[in-house]
Amino acid sequence: RGGFALRPWQPDDAPVLVVSSRDPEIRQWNRSVDLSPAAAGEKIARWRERWQAEEAAIWAICRPGGGGPVGLVGLADVDLRGGGAEFLYWLLPAGRGHGVVVDATVRISRWAVDELGLHRLRITHSVANPASCRVAVKAGFALEGVMRSALLHADGWHDEHLHARVAGDPWPSG
Image 1 (cartoon, rainbow, N blue to C red):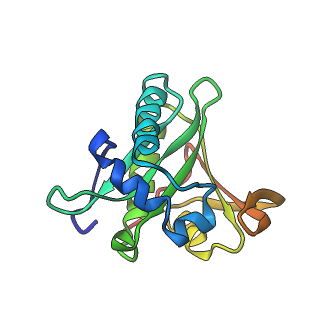
Image 2: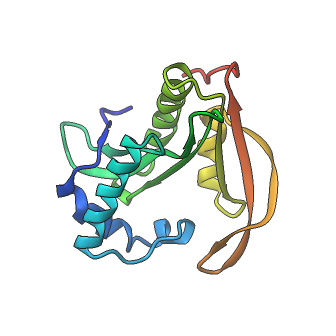
């Protein structure tokens, strides 16, 4: 959407991770700590290792025309044998409001179901995070319920929504 693209994270993207680790909205909903440039580089290297081990698939969401990353989207806790994975995503201010996470989530979901053969994909988020809820619903992930006091955020324990889609669910239109 809008020319945004997905690509693997590169070592020279480490400064973007440093910035993301200090963004108040990203910090509010993710268990992130301030990253040094070295720690950010190590994180990118771990994502590559986890991709090769078939444990995760993490992409950078990049500006149109080959610009740098403005966000992250991917699958964590990939279980090829068990047929499942969990989405994670965040956007820096420059990426917000364009619908790119919804589009990326649908695109990656199709790949995960059609190419990887996964059966169940899930998204969890704090019930106090309506933006993530909108992403999940627009991407075709049904709300299955509330997990009480399921995740510790900086301001305490939060109830979490559990959204999921399974192979055979209809894909969102548009």
